[in-house]
Length: 335
Image (cartoon, rainbow, N blue to C red; front, side):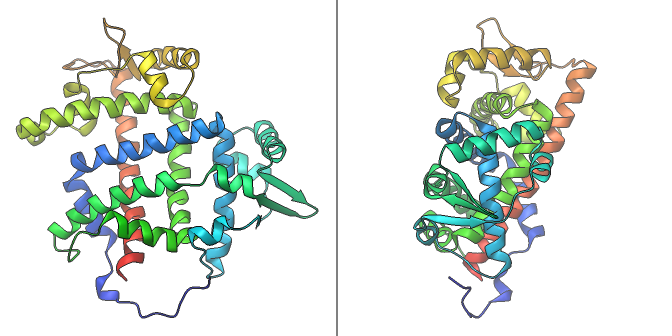
């Protein structure tokens, strides 16, 4: 479907600076929903493919098609896109794919062959076709619902600052994303793919990041409950990651992490050992895993401080990028 010739109400456009200010002001409230969304997305991705690298390659390829459509001012709805038996995608350069996704060339080639054997891709002379199975595997029904909930929550904060006239419902956002699917989901993949590769560069693989992220999410829930009962904690000049370390005083065991992520327990245990060695996690007396030095720690060694600073730096960048993603989708709705 081509973009329609409609009037744009520029006065209603949400400015990215306004969104960033609102995001920073309400960070600790918004971050819990963002964590939930991200962990659900990662868990669903692993359960579908049991292979993060292959899944990321697939969404990268699909996003190339989305960009091709959007570059030619063509937007497909959710139903239009998923009604196609085959979907032609631009030619893939293995070297570029390997570099951008931080996957070795040999692994990239092997995963592409596996995707073809799986029936997700099909090569036809000079064309590469995304087949129905490849579309269905990554059909983001739950992700659209979860993202719409986060955006609706964020729109409520924008309304409180008189940037929006009112909060936009989850249902309305969901409908707009579906009716402008290839455009909105390009925005999403443009956010998600660099997010994944950025954390992968820190943790070495996506499984380790997912395991660590579930520990962070759990501690954030504990911290959020404490902050609600004592908002004086927010007045400290500590970074969010420092507050999380100090007040998120409940860890997860290996079995729970495996159940939450869908990653087999032996793999979880193996990854946890590496995360302990790299000082990303500690293990308490109950064999529960927590981030960094543990609750209430005041004396961090140089290695721990370096890791905390690096993680907090990436968190801020990703937060800004997420605010930018939300702003783009909200502007499709309000303009």
